[in-house]
Length: 187
Image 1: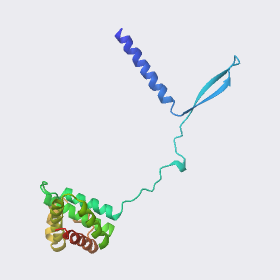
Image 2 (image 1 turned 180 degrees about the vertical axis):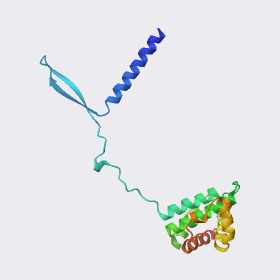
Image 3 (image 1 turned 90 degrees about the horizontal axis):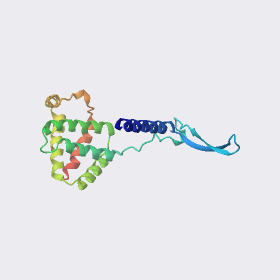
Image 4 (image 1 turned 120 degrees about the vertical axis):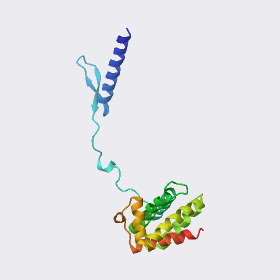
């Protein structure tokens, strides 16, 4: 008896699923005369279009983050990456410094944008001591990048990075220096 009930339940579930999958479009009801003379409602399924009309498609234009927003995100990532007490934070600071110089090379922020962004970030960040510690660590790597290329090559190798993976230009180094000068205001 249990097997029969289980079989009936399975059949009804399968029939229900099959019925749901065939009615994927819109339903429309129309009346047509029946052979006996009365009107019998007729239900027909209208298939759902597989493509969306051009005027209803999602726009491809997505708002782009501003340079300030991206720099704030970069600052947050630097703090997370090189946070005090994080295992391997000195080697992670190498990655963070390279990311920062790379970002500066790609985005070319001006001095005013850097200063305003750092001001906005530092006035709202709750743990300034943690932020300054992380920025100091990354700045020490930045100074090595500028002054001692042999030591920097060794740091990159120890961090599992390669110099050719990063865009380091005079402009990006200058912009990174401006960033650390802006941070110095909060020491």
